[in-house]
Amino acid sequence: MTEPFQFKDSDVKVEKRETVFQGFFRMDKLWLTHPRFDGREMPTFTRELFIRGDATCVLPYDPDRDEVVLLEQFRLGALGRDQSPWLLELVAGMNEDGESPEEVAQREGQEEAGLTFKPLEKICDYLVSPGGSTELIHLYCGRISTESAGGLFGMEHEHEDIRAHVFSADEAIAMIYDGRINNAAAIIALQWLQLNRPRLREGWS
Image (cartoon, rainbow, N blue to C red):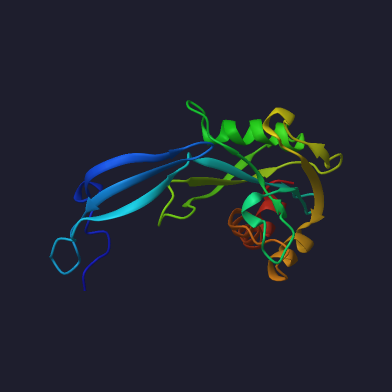
């Protein structure tokens, strides 16, 4: 049986590339070809690619109180669906040039929730929507105390309006299953927490 990953980046031939939109986001159009699994060459085809930088997301967790902090804010992509466009999400931010994901995590923790993470544990890196977007998420869980957590945060000049909520870990996990939390980063992180809570509560307390 053939093993996966027989092709690599250099097997893709980009014949032409142009930027078709540049605003808050950027969109490129590519003309490309690549080998097929049956040995033939794929005819040249076009795809639009959403150019978005990498981002870092953190689930703030207090192992002593077994509580998490989740952020509520408006998200345009959820508008027009059968739900509120104010979502419960993780601490998150775009990676700037020269910043490590850990530096982004600490910066965004302060800006969005007034939190500092000690320590940070890596959960995973994942591609958000590789069929049409370049974005990669660096996902972490960060130890915090929820003793004085919660409140209003956000950078006004970036049009951020954020409310930080404290939930028990059990309630946050339950919100995945009843649909109140339906964004990928929060689902992945909370399901990871569900698997790793005993270890974190023993090792972080």
